[in-house]
Amino acid sequence: MATIYDIANEAGVSIATVSRVFNNSKSVSEKTRVKILEIADRVGYHPKAFAQGLARKNSNIIMALVPVISNYFFMEVLGGIQDKLAQYNYDLNIFNITSDNSEQKIAQQVEYVLKKGMADGYMLISIHQDTQYWQRLKSLDLPVVLVDEYHQNFDSVSVDSVEGAYEATSYLITKGFKTISMISASPNAKPIIDRVKGYKRALEDSGRLVNPKYIVTGDESYRDGFTEEGGYQAMKTILHNFPEVDACFCASDIQALGAMKAMRESGKLLPLIGFDDIPLAQYVGISTMRQPMYDMGSLALEKLINRISSPQSNISHTVFSPELVIREQNFEPVID
View 1 (cartoon, helix red, strand yellow):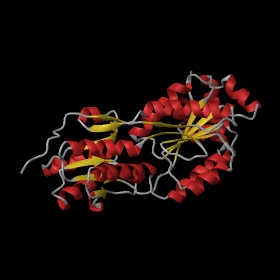
View 2: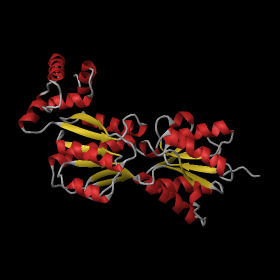
View 3: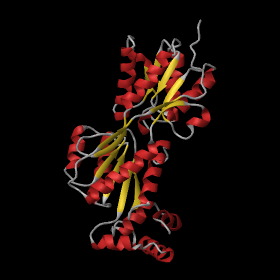
View 4: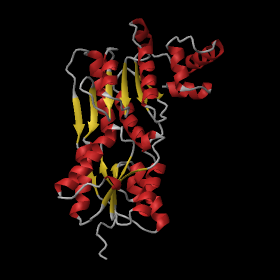
């Protein structure tokens, strides 16, 4: 069966434009509207579910709001959502939130989409805001599930980042490393708040002092710093300014990829543990804290379907425990 993605591709427009046509938005030109509807007729994209949804004033659409579609983490989560969606009578639309390190602008985009009522339910993936914002969003009274985030007023699926950072740092400590740095990202991002907390707690529990200078961040202007470039810049800073560092915990595998490039260029390779276990990690030998991204997406979809069908049901929170995955790195300290 043809999908909304097929129609968008053939019409040469975005998925959002196709979605607006099927939601009778007046912001699409008549020429484009006719073109999209003709393609839809030809390929048979008029499932009964959609027509029934319109009659009930439902769209039979689930919308996922994500900061960056191309990110490995989001792709894995979306894979779990899409596969689980095959069991239900819904289509999936994806709204790419423009991430420019401005929490206010991200908040405005999210609120705009939800107020338009373009879907029956919404999954907000890795969108991090303060408590006041989540309380305001709750007043919209819409089915919403948070993924990679937590607030008491919404169903959520996340991973225990404190535990993951603690376990990764503790492993490096037990292997005998003396000066362990952390490659961080935007301090306002919930995963970073928790991972810094876990990193510090592991050091403190081992009787070590926490030196803030060893928590290093690269460029935060894009994706909250969860980028290859962010990891590359941070590792260059560590290697140049802190030669005493002998191991590193990295807040994400994406950053770890950039950190590895910086180490190869310098000729100094530090044992490193990342976070996520993206598919690429196994091929480049990144040890990491694995979080079940695919399962998180699948479970989030189940929670959202339940919220749509049973609006008064109890709010549920699922927190997965990450798993330490050690790959081919030298985790033996260098004795001078």
